[in-house]
Every structure is written in C-alpha cells, then in structure tokens.
Length: 293
Image 1 (cartoon, rainbow, N blue to C red):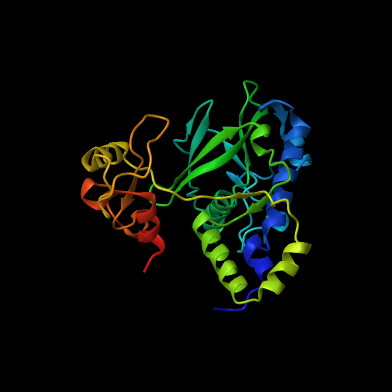
Image 2: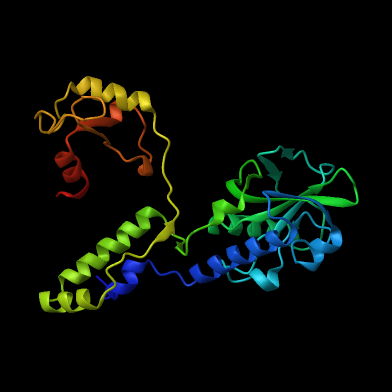
C-alpha cells in the first residue's frame, strides 16, 4: 500500500473542492442581484449581461474564462441556458425543464463543448440559471436549477428548479466523490494508521480537531424493489439464511425479527434485484459477507 498521509486520506482531498464551493457562492450572489425570491421575473437582457448570468445568443452560456478548471477539463461549467421553446421540444414546467442537448450547425466543437459544460455542472452539483421569456417578450424570467439527470442516450438533461435555501451548506466542504470512494480512502487511511506505533497515533490524536469536519458527498445508489426485501424477510421467518440462527433482536418499529437483505451478486456488479439473488441474514453474517475471508 502506498504511504499516503492519514490526513489526506481522511479528508478526501480534491483540488477543485474550494473552486466548486466558491462558484456556488458566486451564483447565489448573482441570483440575489435580480431577486430574493425563488425566481426572478421581468429581468432585462442588459441586467443578465451586466451580472454575467447570460451572454450571447447560444442556448448554453458557459463563460469558459471564469469556469475553466473547476472540473478537470477545459470545457468550463455551464452558467445558464436560454429556453425560447421554438428550436427544441423542451418540456418546461413550474418544477423544472427537460432540456435537449444543443444540436446546431455551428462550425467547430461548440455543441460538444456546451454538452460537456452541462455534464460538468451535473457532476459538480453546481446550480445554473434557466432563462425563459416573460409575458413581455423583451424581458426574461430566471429560475435557479440543479441538473438531476444527464442522459447521453436520449440527449437530454433534466433541470429541477430550486430555491436559494437548498444551496445553504452551512460552511460544509464539498467533496466530489462517491460514498464508496470515501470508504476506500478511509479504510486505506485506517490501514496506514495501523502500520504506525500506538505512540504515533496518540500524538496525532492529541493535536487533531475533536469536532469532525462536515462535508457534502455525492452518493450513487440503486432503487431497490421493496417487494423483494419484504418477501425475502417473509421467506426467512426470522432465521438467518446463512448461519441458520434466530435474528439477534426484535425491531421496535414493527416487532419483527431483525434481519438484513443481502444481494449475493452486488447490484454494482450487475447483480439482479430478485429473490434468487438475495438472502435475509443477520447483521454479523452480513458484515462477514462483505469483509470476511
């Protein structure tokens, strides 16, 4: 195992975290310049240009000079999109918009770069501005949105409209990694710590901050079928399907024996969410299945 410092592994260091946080704060301040509500109405094109919320005539405004490098490529991060409703079949509602990827006849890689800028916005969980026409066609309405789905196959992205309150992170550090990636890093850090002496660990503990650092971490998971879980528990009848012992305790929520439903072939490895691929097992056996030899 490589000799990383325990501090680096525990923090889940990402050189772009500070830039991501700063860009989110910058966009919050921009939105406050045009509204203190959840959406802005009747904003002039001049205001949008003045504040750097939108510029040009393209559907996706990126401002590459300002956002290049926030995510590790040269495309930048999308700042805003303009929805006119005349060039694409975008599905616009009060809750959000299904936005089609740009597909124009412009020369060069404009479309490709704008699509990548939208992907960067999605990956970094940075909000963007959705601009639409006002009742007065010379003015614009503006929503703040988060990209919740990025579908390369359908060439669409779904942007959900949000309020400023949803961006209040209480000075948390933004970590652009999955929970699984953090677990690997944390376990590596523990492994490295175990190669040190007890005296070395205690010395670091004495100088360490006892208040844990609060972070926001992206989590990728699977929507599981509740019927599969319920039927597996019914099938087990309170007996672990691995060690054949009774469940270790009764749940206070429903007075049922406590067992955990484990996927034999993990979903992350292509396993099915089916009765044939699960076992209802006790917590001890569950930990052994994941961490035992």
